[in-house]
Image 1 (cartoon, helix red, strand yellow):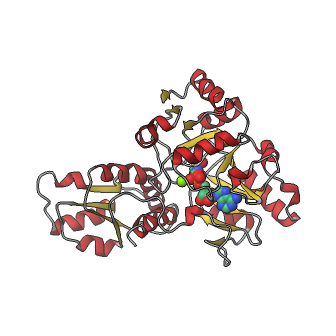
Image 2: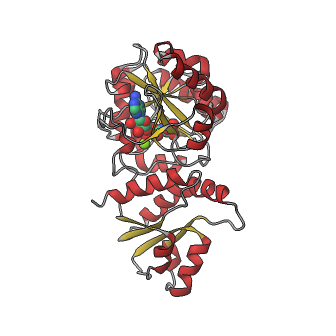
Length: 345
Ligand code: TXA
Ligand code: MG
């Protein structure tokens, strides 16, 4: 594995590797992706192998402009109403943290879509991601660059620690700005359905295309494994509490505490005086003072996986996490925390 910068020459090195069927991890505005040529089945197989990912889990295909959508998706086969929604979303929310599930082109191998007739397409806004896609094959399949079911990486060092020699190159683009994955929106259903909440807010989507459904379709297929109950999980069992319950917990020196904000942490501290070193196990997702609710959920999302990685390294016997308020990115944060908590069962 070789660490690269996000400079032009380094991105070209990673792009050549992708053209040759090898893998490169790269930054996006949401989390780091583990990229391979979307049209090359051996590259796709390498992705699954590196992630130890079950084959049934389809990958997101990343493109670097709206015109390239034709390479991977067959928008023409959508009904006119869905096509209108697609273009409205592309115009306003691309590039950005929104993945669209659309009828696939035959050129996209079944391995990329797990045999589904649909493809998940995303146009990321991160400049390094866009260059990597352009300099390579124009379409990069990339799941988040973590072992299957584990925490998503928001820094190059997370990828290095988790995938090590299983990846050829890592482009270091600093911290991922948003910190939770893209919203996955299925446009092949009427009404459209959010299969995974994420960086693009439901409110912003509904403002453009009207009401969208949330969660698994009734017949429960095709599965979006981002919906598996125990996804995005740290090693320690995680318990989720609302603010009041969190403030009432008693300190236990081998457990970790993840507060949403300083207010709740402050109330908790009035009851608890952790011993020296106790602070190593106490964290706050949105630590800044005087922030509005939207800024808090933004900061919390950006910190979420990084803090969970840090907590996990300290090997607590349990993690107590405070729920985020549900507004804005809070829905995606709570979704990830609930999945981490579901691993206990
Ligand atoms: O922010 C992100 O989306 C990151 C960055 C790297 O772009 N990628 C990411 O990929 O989170 P991944 O593979 O970890 O998650 C892809 C999600 C999964 O929940 C998968 O099941 C769903 O998208 N998905 C992919 N193709 C699908 C399809 N054809 N139909 C339904 N769901 C699909
Ligand atoms: Mg993932």
